[in-house]
Structures are given as C-alpha cells and as structure tokens.
Image (tube, rainbow, N blue to C red; front, side, top):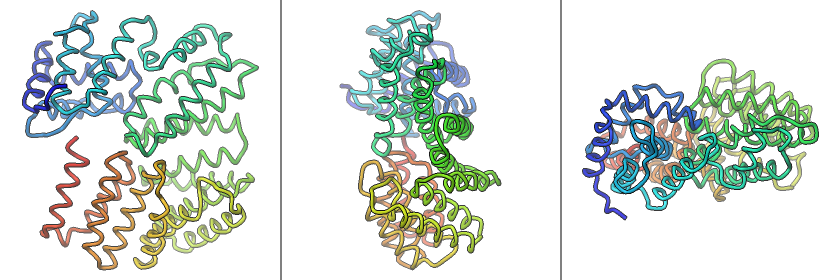
Length: 443
C-alpha cells in the first residue's frame, strides 16, 4: 500500500481533472451525471457549486479533506472510462491513478480494492449500472424479474429482505454514507419490481422496510427532499400492506426526522397523525414512542402543558406494555424527558433523566442515540455550572458521533458549542474546537 502523502495525492487528483480538460465546474457536472446513473440521491440533489467546492478541497493541501465514500465511488466510475467513454481499468489508467491518489490520502487498501472490484464488475456485465452494486446471485435474479415480472419469486424477495435487514443492523456501527450506497440498488429494485398476485403482500412489506430505512439514511445524509419522498412512500406502503400500528411506527419515524430538519407546521401534523394511528393499534410501545415524540414537539414549541400531558401518556403506555423487551423502553423515554426538561424545565431534572438514559445506551445499534443523549447530558451539565465535566463529556460524544455521522447528534454538538461561547477563550474550549475539526470536519 502507498505511504500516505497529501501533496502527491492532491497533484494526482488535479492532473486527472486537467488531463481531460475539465474545470472544477466541468468535473462537478460529470460527477453529478454519474450520481444520477447510480442513484446516489444525496449528490444528485447537491448544487454544482457545492460539488465544485468539494473538488477544490480535495486538491488543496491546506484543506486536509478526503473524498467521502460516496464520492470515492463516483470518482471511480468516472475515471474507469476514458474521455471518449471506453473502459480503461489497467495499470496506468486514470482509475489506477485515482486509486493511487486515494491511497496517498489514507484510504484503506480494503476500500480501494472494493472500488476496483465494483467498476470491474460494471464493465464486465450488460446491465443497469445501479444493479451492478448488488451481489450475485441477487443481481441475476433482479435482472430477470425486472425483464419479466413472471420471474419474480420468493428467493429474490428473501435475498432483498436479508440485504435490507443487514443494512439496518449496521446502523450505528457503519457511516451512513456507506449504508446509503449499500441500500440504493435494493430500494431501486423494490420500486421497479412489478407486483404479482401471489407475492403482492410480501413485496409490499419488503418495500415498506426498504423505504423506511432509505428515509432514515437520506435524513442522516442531509437530503431532505429524498427523506420526504421515501417516508411518503413508506407511509403509502404501510397503508396497503399493514394495519394502523405499523403505519403509526412509520409516521413516528418520519416525524422524528422532520422535527430536526424543518421548522414549519407540518411536523405537528405528522406527529398527530402518528398518535391517532398508534391509539387505534394494539402495540403500547408504538403508542409510547408516538406520545414521547409528541411531548418533544410540544416542548420545542413552548407548550409545557401539552408536553407534560404527552409524557404522562407515554409512561402509561409503557406500563401497559409490560416487561417484554422492545425497541422503545423506559431508558429511551427518559431521554425524551430530559430533552423536554432542557426546553421547559430545570437543568438538574434534565441531568437526572439524561444520565440514566445515556448509561443504558450501550449496544452498537444504540450509538447514534448515545451521541444525541450524551450531548444533551453535556448541555445539562453546562447549565448546572459544571463546565469542565460538560466539555469532557463532549469529547466522548464527538468520538461517538464521528463514527456514524448522525445528523441530530452533530446538530446537538453545534448547540452545545454555542452554549460554551462565554468560555471561548479558555484552552479547554480551544481543545474541543480542534477535536471537532479533526474528527468531524477534516474528512
């Protein structure tokens, strides 16, 4: 493997672009076109000026940035062909130069091999570029079913479902940008498959699961238009394939993303729709989660009585649910209580609730939530007057959040840093700023 050398990497990336006679704007358009073919929605929705700035940073020694995984994939597909569109993958090719540049930027050898394998596969088969991202035999089964709906079978649905579940399990331990690339071909196949009478219900459930996770990942990668589109499709799929309880769970997840991405009145409407569906259903934990979210929405809007009432209902729901394990439990609800206290109550009560919530969030799947609750706990400590303890905890939250790039946790870290403004000249705040930059910005 190449020894990392930023200067060499920047020179190689600039030479690749200039060798094709491209300006930054030209390369931005080329990357946008590749993203369109591969269904990388977060890049498709980006402005060209934003892509240009990214390219400039990659070529700048001072910027210290590295193309993220989605851009690594797009660059590999872009440079796997010559300027005239012919495949060129061997030694000395533009692809080879690109992978060398990425190695100099510190990209692991495992990742550069993976990129080479993907583009080699795409050059060796005659199929939709997006489907190339699927592994065999799933890809072959999907190609057959898309060509002839009569070829849709249980094996394909089983394999696609297993792939969706695998992506879901990796939330919290794998960056969302990589999960988005893994899920993109699956949701596209789900969208394009034609129902058959025998498999309509199974395909509907598969679509629901895939769209729901796609919406979550789109939110985490800051593509709000795609978030709304996928969640809307998930609500529609839940309406046809399941009962009100499942639709309530989908709407609650949708509302949670909207709560952290918009300030208009649609959030309250979605939350209320989720609560209505949850009350009609029989799952008390779904009801509890819907009421907890209703409480946070009310707290953010300053409606203290509504927040308190919703929290009371959430606790009653959990008591009715019994002691069986579930995704939403008392520790999660305490996190919501802590957030509501941060908005409406006292820092001391917020600290009590959040400390218990953070202590319970230990599983890999819970690391995104741990980053959120941990940062809220740091804010509570800050407001209690323990600035040093708050800053120490924020260092842990930065490390946790950097691993997954959870959007809400990043928002919370920004909020905590703003509350540290009175201590901005202190060395411990300067150290925190350096950690934020190194862990979360210089990538």
